[in-house]
Image (cartoon, rainbow, N blue to C red):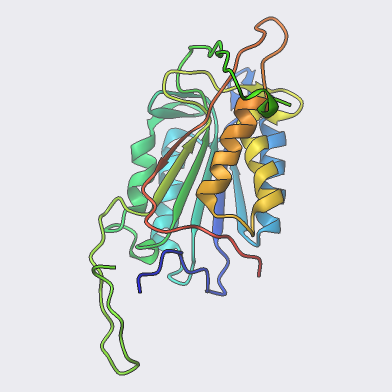
Length: 253
């Protein structure tokens, strides 16, 4: 019978890299430190090995992820990378300019990172994907929302079976906003997306699967937040791209 859940069985802790770029010359992404602290607390509580990195250049970001993809232990169940920065449609910013997101994902593909082949590789990106604002839209009737073909059974004496998997399988990339749109961040309380992500993980991190939790993150951002101040009443919806092949359930050690 085909297994539909990624195994989380190893004693080696799963790893979270937090890349927090908040100083850009004289410009500071205020509130990003709040996000980093929330993420550290949340993933530590889920028994991840949390490793933060601040104010990385483009080359440092690329080298950092290439190095971990080569050195990560084969007994690691899962790899998570959270990027907090400025961004454009298909890019995030190092402190010295933009780098393609695909370039940051590439070292973890199945043919380049055998230690993580067949295991979940999760990327959460808090960055704008454009300059458009979402004015929102009225919706009626939901007022209450607002406040195993290739896998074989083997006997103990059978030879192990090697499954051929796509190079791009087992990734999830969760963006703070849809393509072309602004991602909101409060200078005191952090970004909408990261704070919603941490809230949902804190409440359901060991009981619900990741895709269900990400739908709840979308719901939280969509219905619990709206911009205030000079630019008032704008909305935001995160965007999830999934190449996962199984359900992700986190566990505590």
